[in-house]
Image (tube, rainbow, N blue to C red; front, side, top):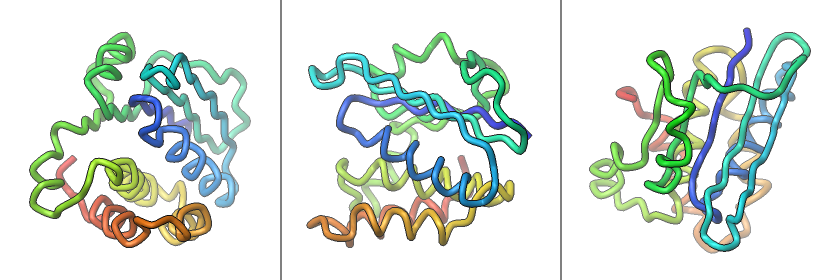
Length: 164
């Protein structure tokens, strides 16, 4: 198993947080990890990328051009990641979930946690990580923040999604 995940969004949208938590949970499950952040000029509103490989064997070469899963959290990130699209990629785009966000009152500040929940579901179904481990890491990182209840709701909602 060698799963390649490309996460993309605008700087400040939590792309590196998602990548870090998924990597930690997969590592805790005994898997090998390669994680390459690409910050660009995110502090000036640029795109933030994270290239994450999760494997049951040592990762020989961490660069990839054909992800298995691709998260796109902004229009700017969509433009930046076009070169990585291919027929087999499972593409998760923020705009395709707008009705779910609206009907469940999920604020934009918690979209990243929704996608963390969704990616957790996908990876847990493959036996790559455990939902409880990701949640524990998320809680350790964010439970003291003012919007913790909102983030918990967003994580659970993302983890309940079936049509992605």
